[in-house]
Image 1 (tube, helix red, strand yellow):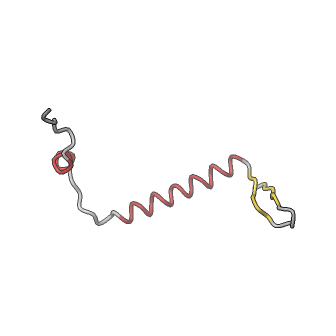
Image 2 (cartoon, helix red, strand yellow):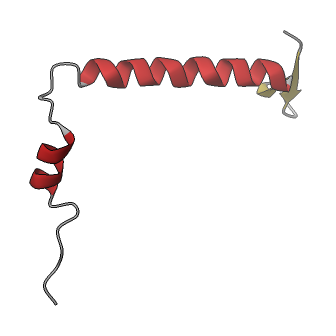
Image 3 (cartoon, helix red, strand yellow):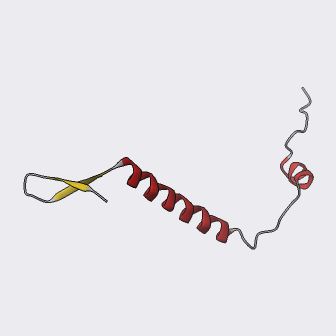
Length: 65
């Protein structure tokens, strides 16, 4: 991976520039990792079918005006 560093006046690195293809690969890996962690967190949660979820949430019920 080709990278370039941006440094401040004291020579300390402040940023890294990488090519777009590498960036998208890193971004997708991080998103996949985050999705996996989120899925693990809800793995043991109770499941509902669509109709149960609608009933619990009140979604789709008409309001009396």
